[in-house]
Image (cartoon, rainbow, N blue to C red):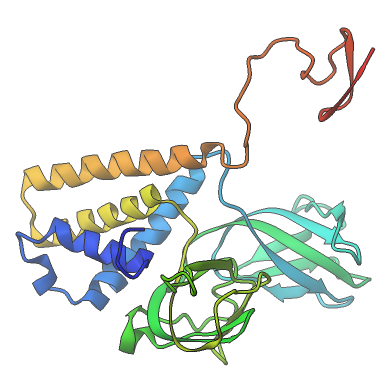
Amino acid sequence: MFHSTGSHLMWMLEEFQLWFEEQGGDSKFSNSLVMDHCITPKFGEVFTRVQMQTDMPVLLRTSLALVAGTNRYMLPPNIHEVWQLVLLDDNGDIIADARPRNYMHSAGPGWRLEGREIVFEPSLTRNHSATLIYSPGADLNLHYSTSGQIIDSTTVQLGDPVADGLGRIDFRPNAYAGMTLRVLGMSTSAPVEERIIQTYDYSTGRVTFADALVGATGSDKIYEIVMPGTVAFYESIVLAAAIKYGAMRGVSGKNYQLMVAEYQSAIKSASDQLANVNVRISTHQAKNTWDSEGYEGNVVLAYPLERESG
């Protein structure tokens, strides 16, 4: 991103203000009000729209320790759509796809969602390690702070964005699970580091992640918590927020139309960038060639990624 701090959120605020420089937009609302009432709400709206327009949405996962006799488990608040619940062995490998049954099934649905909880019906009879794979929404408070603390290589103490940054802390249990923590070092000795948050303890204000940071421990660390995304994704959020704010301020028709046109272009780019995010090879023509599954010519496929001479 293009802000001097390396922050996505600060760049978004700066970009937002550029749209209203002539109208003096930044004199009416403080940065915190713009963040709380314009930018943050549009994160959820734009992210959900992009997710629904692509066959390759951003997918996250959360771990569940399932205990026999316990049928209710609290999930992170930002789940938009559950894709899969899988059971794992002791090595963390998938051994079963736990698909739900119909709600009207005589033996119960297996599992269902009820608000922020996943409910198992009938109750579990054995302990299981499981992973829930889901597409995220954006129902949370993103923020930027200059008072973070790196406790150790996999633990960060969150700062106070209201006092020294932008946005607000989310105090719901595990609210930041699956979000991106960005430690903004901006030097050769302390680079910008991005990590997917695994757990968030609202009572201590600490987040943990699997991949260790390379930067030094200590206090007064600059960081932010954001949604995973591209430049086009963040720009589309800015423009959606600008359209909302422009309507509040009575922006002229020409400028308003330009915002709408730029927003449509940015969100189209964001959707296009996700279209094949999990497909790292180009598409090929639909012909009966050796790489077609079930090809019966001179090449026999033992498995789609393997071949042998016939």
